[in-house]
Image 1 (cartoon, rainbow, N blue to C red):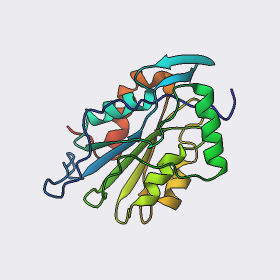
Image 2 (cartoon, one colour):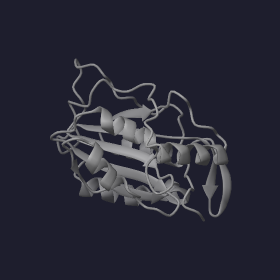
Image 3 (cartoon, helix red, strand yellow):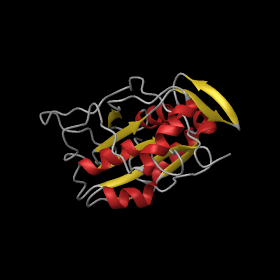
Length: 206
């Protein structure tokens, strides 16, 4: 395995989208916290147990759905203006270029703000030890003062990667809370792990 492996995520439609209207209040979790789950996903050819597999619904998409079914939250799927290729090697090469350039890939559908949320869950794969650069685009865009940001990742071997450090630098004013890292190959069996983490961060819906 090399440091440029990526794990799968899908841009298919999520079970909900983050509303941008200020007329409807954000849903509150069982603890009364208003939660946004924002995730980036990619389908297609992905690393799996030392080989490759073709994912129609990718690992981070599965994890995001699992979380959203267990808590009250708004869900926003982060989409790139220039979509990432389904081809594994092409995506690896693009990611290396974007990391080397400290790029900020454009987001097609950014929320107007995250002001009304108390907690923001940022979910993504780990590509070459860190989140895809489009997550930096998202994090740089908003004022996170007074909010808690929790990194959520799917990965091959890098856990949370550098997300805690990166979001501490880019999510202005945020408190970085406990993250959740799930191996991509094991994400469909992660229910107990997800529930335990949601309970620890005090957003689990009883």
